[in-house]
Length: 291
Image 1 (tube, rainbow, N blue to C red):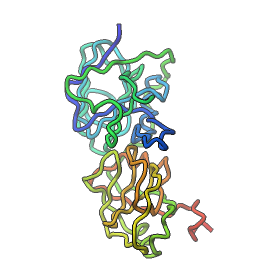
Image 2: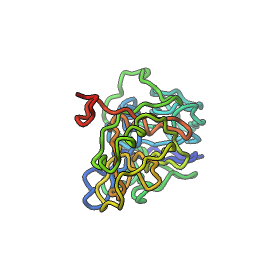
Image 3: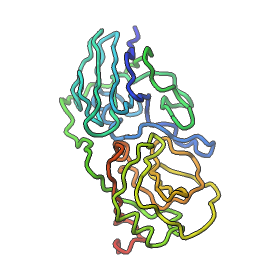
Image 4: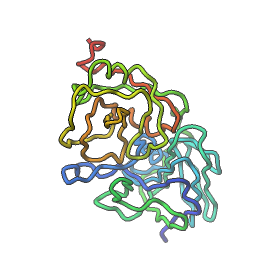
């Protein structure tokens, strides 16, 4: 008999996510996948799943589920008050409800169930891409989510002692981007010296930042070029956008810098109003501080 999870309440936004659709950018298909890949990977590890199995990405809590059979579950990322432990595997019994309140810090919580969320894949992935519309729709009340099976052993882990998201300022290493020459030294100094504030218009596509705008040193527009997760693109407003999982495949605004891929996981947990500062990475050969 196949086990499933019935969604009672989905919260503000709950999507199914895995590692997305890599290698299809030339076809105009973005990778998508979990915004916080580290939290997704850890959630799967805690229930004994292969890291490629799908989890639920829950934005600002609010998710309520009921299982029709006993299942092993774990949550990672933003800690939500509710009916379950965090960073620790537990058994959700048949008929029991599982509820997540709003997290006090962080934005996205990952819910892994042993066997994975086994919805139908689209182009080889179960990830929901909110920009392109590919993948399963966002989770809605009344949805029944099938649970897969796995023969992997359960890990002998009681709790994962990992750092959790905070509401404090976040410092991010930034490398100079391919269009750094579209900005003078004053703009680069402004990027790396001021505290930027996360705008409420942010989503899975990117984190929009508010602050003193960055002025361009060149006029005109670029021919559209490839975009990657972690790119800091500067539109005509002069206010940077840090691309996350569902970023566009191409873009015509200059990319002043790149945030390291591992650090982008931290950005997935940024909440509106939180502050971000960029620090020139020491590994950047074009940065005088690296010499």
